[in-house]
Length: 183
Image (cartoon, rainbow, N blue to C red; front, side, top):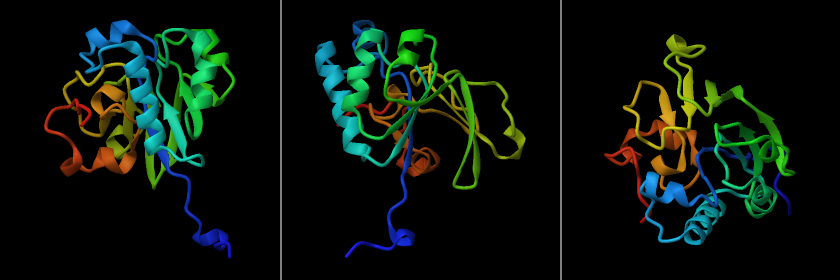
């Protein structure tokens, strides 16, 4: 017997950035613990799909992949409904790839009663900052000094996987360093 609609699980909303699929430079620049690009890409896909169910939503805050021609194939392999906010390494072909539910440069969404300001880039100030709004960003690969209500959702700062808002807001669950390495 099927559950009533009110009791069915709601889609969870995840955030990520800076996957840089297929980019060998990121292994060295961001000190990723992968020997090859193929190993990195497979680990990122596996971690994504381990966290994300088919009905979940993912906001990717930019810098998806080195080669735009690879994006459509990657998106087909990744679970969930995927929204893209353009990063500095996302050319028009990445934005045009089939598989995105939406593409923009910036978004403001409400989640769990909180206003979230989403962009690839971290802001010094943002809409609603002094009224509790939260800025989620990528771009910095876990290298910025933390700012109140601002979180780097990039894979380098979050165990190479998308992350839930509740996980970002729970300081006890955060590793002492800003970069959580895979187990």
